[in-house]
Image 1 (cartoon, helix red, strand yellow):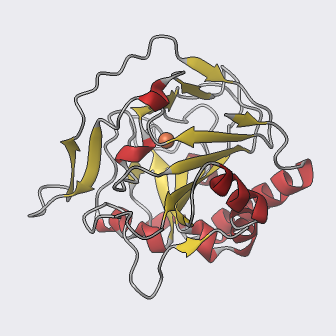
Image 2 (image 1 turned 135 degrees about the vertical axis):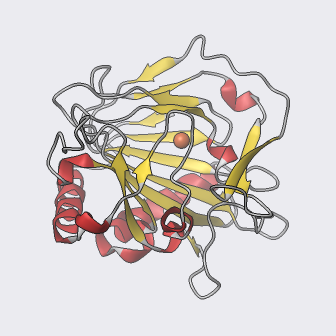
Length: 270
Ligand code: FE2
């Protein structure tokens, strides 16, 4: 579902300015995690697994040429920032916990929406990587399924710069697999386990071409993806994943994303 003009131009610019100042003040020379999304393989080191409570940086897989030299500037080589921006940066906190967000969660049936994770996605010009087809319920898994994705465009999203694609009707599917911490920890520390034997098809997928400021809402089962970006124009987006926190909904202890008890997921009130 698309809600155009959810954010005005001033809000969009403020968030872009904020991310610019975060990135330019960070010591990116120490970051070496690459975010590889083609097969939904994440950088599964500790840097990634503890990122739910931090502001962390992940490189584009195609950021460097065959000689290891950055194709873009450092700032233009980041794939994404995750996953605690909404609780650690006042500007992103403000837009995440604003009443309209809580109202949407409740209008869609949530009783106690919790902000589980946020990502700032750069989809950089020329080197922005594709994100393979997936369901968000695999990564923010609850019993029963409850995750609601908020995806805000901070640029015009076009067929050229890697807009979202989604399969209409796929919200009727079950979530087919789950991404969890492995026990005992295997190489990488995470694994996919099969859930419902549902077969996806990307046939009929539609491009979600939206202008900056638009909000795209994504159901836990909706199959969605985005192509890489070879264009000269970046395609920034900010995403939030809300989960149901009411009594009786289980957030398993082996989900990849965990918070320490002193830094729990916060409710989005309205
Ligand atoms: Fe997603």
